[in-house]
Image (cartoon, rainbow, N blue to C red; front, top):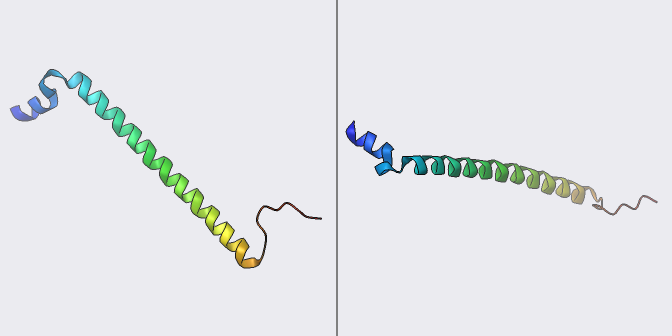
Length: 65
């Protein structure tokens, strides 16, 4: 049990180490979520473009006349 307390104390630097560790964990989690959402959005765009290509539509021309 003593070694666990020593580990958590980080040799007296726990006040600096643990907040830094928590901040890194938050940033990494945010990046993971952000990347996952971006991947889903890009896949949806690719699926839409593939559907348009398959149906013969031109994507983004904007010429209706």
